[in-house]
Length: 372
Ligand SMILES: [Mg+2]
Image (tube, rainbow, N blue to C red; front, top):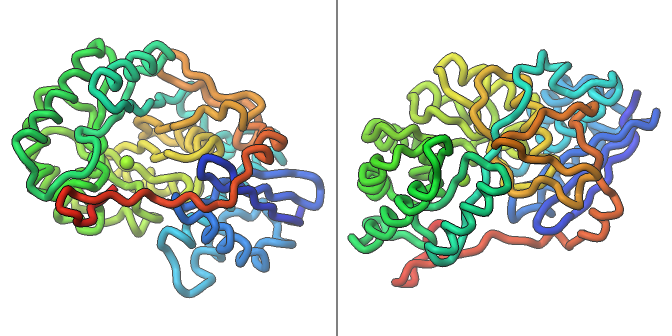
């Protein structure tokens, strides 16, 4: 079995898929992308063709190592995201070759269904509460939102604090006790502002607070984590086991959120999960991307013991011949071989775009750049 061809598809709203074909007719799908740099990652995949074309796709661990270490310079969002999408496609091929879901080859299933959460959005608070209720009606039981919508100053006003408390209180109040609410601080907050606000929000018994500060300085995250009883989550901007090592060793977060499209694919997120288990930490894959990313997350969820919840922004409606379904807050683990999905190629061709989506820039009221 040999890899024969790798095709690239830029797919709206901002995604990048690859289709890996073998000489004996197997096809594997992957989603190698960095949000805002789809074209750069597509080129990084193209540059790996000499390693991949003609190689045996079943030797995915060897190929992972060769791709990761073979360029001398290693790690970072671009190279590891290219590798992540390739890794997903190789697991898809391997599962199809043996006629089983990838999680079976990885020792699973460890569970029968995967808790999956919805984002809550809206311009006004009323709209946001309405959006929460709509998602609850669709079957979700776990929700995530921002405490503050828009820019935040390093030390913001009492008005901003009170609005955040009101927002989170209204959302939590609209949910029964059997449902959970988590917050994403999006790395927008200074450590001081984060500590101040989280203390005020402890009353709402949040499931976790994500990226209360940026991940570049783990000690700052430790300061926040030690200041509160709210579980801390991080990891969407960390890459490979080496990226997660310090967070675990310093016990800076209880919830790790490796992204299947950035952290090194299924192969690497399984290893991150094994490291996390030693520290009693849980895995909640980050996924603001497409249906292949979600499918890869479900395969990991179904093959590790320490899984918490899965993020999604699309259940694959249109993109998949059979989109995922939410029932009682969960997605059933897929039964089909490989990644368990069938891509509708006609639809993704209809959804083609030039790959030029870029991250929005936002500014504070004094005109200074601030984190999105
Ligand atoms: Mg996030």
